[in-house]
Image 1 (cartoon, protein in one colour):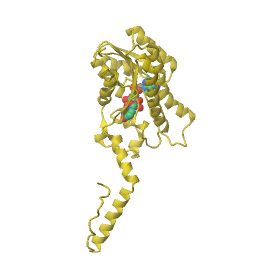
Image 2: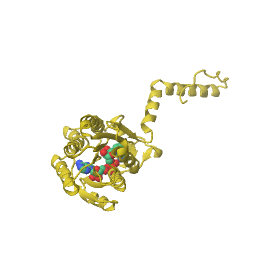
Image 3: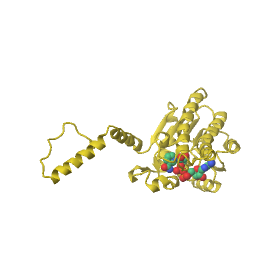
Image 4: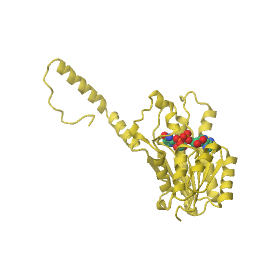
Length: 284
Ligand SMILES: NC(=O)c1ccc[n+]([C@@H]2O[C@H](COP(=O)([O-])OP(=O)(O)OC[C@H]3O[C@@H](n4cnc5c(N)ncnc54)[C@H](O)[C@@H]3O)[C@@H](O)[C@H]2O)c1
């Protein structure tokens, strides 16, 4: 079935990446249910969409809200074809400071909310249904002070695999995208970015539309043979971090710094340059 006429629930669609996903799926012809804690923001985004849309006030961490939202989608449109679990929050503390309450707050929004929407999708979706979970590169590699977020996003990848396995017989697919740094309120309020703990090069910052494009593909029929997959949408940031870490582990950077210091000392003493080394050292 083409995108036209399908119904998609997008959580956290009031702003940022969720609003970008809602706009893209609507432009593709889907009817959108925008589920957000902030009803006014969801309604404003809904107003700007190309097609039919319904804004619902929904706290994804409240089971009753999730059930009510899925019910409203069915009541208004009579079907649910796509669920995009995008709502999320990120909080920051050192590991010795987190309370159980802090952990549960992040896990209940970023992971349990998606699990509840997955359950509702399984109960109401027909064959050809698709779930797309918005995880994060933090599911794979992370920074200090973000333990619950990293754990929740890693858990979301696991939930994606479980949903893919159990969805197979029902004809429901489940996939995840792992955004890198995306230009939204969440990115620029990150204290690790402001303190310099996490450095983000401007060229590594993508737009909500970059995530929306990947989500639209995974939600659509062209991805009919893709399920249980995790797709990094990060401009190659993860790949580069891996390479650098590998080189540092081999001691290449240390040897390079030592070599540079030695050459500088020889120059200061007017000594002849040593013969060129056979093997190249970092940076290559
Ligand atoms: N921006 C980035 O750099 C980045 C990177 C990796 C992953 N992500 C993930 O992408 C998703 C969207 O991020 P964003 O940058 O657009 O964030 P954002 O903070 O700009 O927007 C989040 C939206 O979710 C809503 N929301 C928050 N808690 C909710 C709840 N309990 N129930 C329903 N709605 C709720 C907010 O009202 C808001 O509209 C998140 O899951 C985030 O973890 C973002």
